Image (cartoon, rainbow, N blue to C red):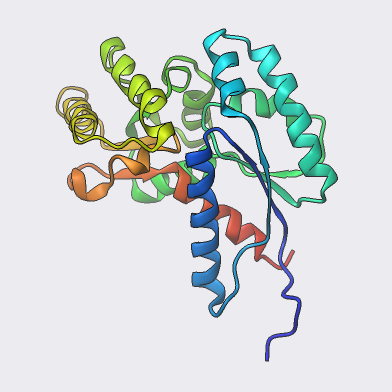
Amino acid sequence: MQKRPLNQKLIGILGGSSNVATELYYRYLNETANARLGGWDIAETMIAGMNFGNIEGFLSADDWAGLETYMEGKVDRLIAAGIDVLLCVSNTLHKPLESILASRGVGFIHIADPTGEAIRTAGLARLALFGTRQVMQLKYQRQRYEEKFGLEIIVPDPAEQDDINRIIFDELVRRDVRDTSRDRYLEIAARLQRDEGVEGLIFGCTEIPLLIDQPDLTDLPMFNTTRLHCQAAVEFALSAD
């Protein structure tokens, strides 16, 4: 009989960006843990849910300093609660998070790292990146993939970026999933595969799995950062060291 309580590390979830992504994280973490452990066991988690209205306001104003200050308070609450590792449910918010964690001694799994490892294992080198406008236009996520994993990251053209970003903020974060939006994402992905020679697609926004998945475009490998991030966190939480 299993000795109780089962020993595992506490996963801190910096959530609320968006609440839809936070729901996905909680489900993926617990499905992954249960698949490993069986029975009734799931992951041990602590969630700090930010107000997505604040997040959107800071991003719209390009106020990264204000966003960092807001996030700091939530991160400190998770650390005070005794978490062993921190996950942020947003690709976009990894930009201020890296600065926040530089002076805080807590375990951290960067969302790009499990995805980069999966891409490297698959033997691919030239990847398309979908995400919010910030993820596609700024360098911080692309550089992580390029410098740490030697990948070449291709982003959509400006008009395509506008459509991808609008669908995320106006639809997906509200769990509004439309066939026309799915068709648009697949159209952009197919163009990048045809015209830019991309070998795979990175979901650089954690709500994208609501809209498209591998069966929608079977000849272009898709890398779900949300699921890969959760799998890495469970592996860490259940490790012996």
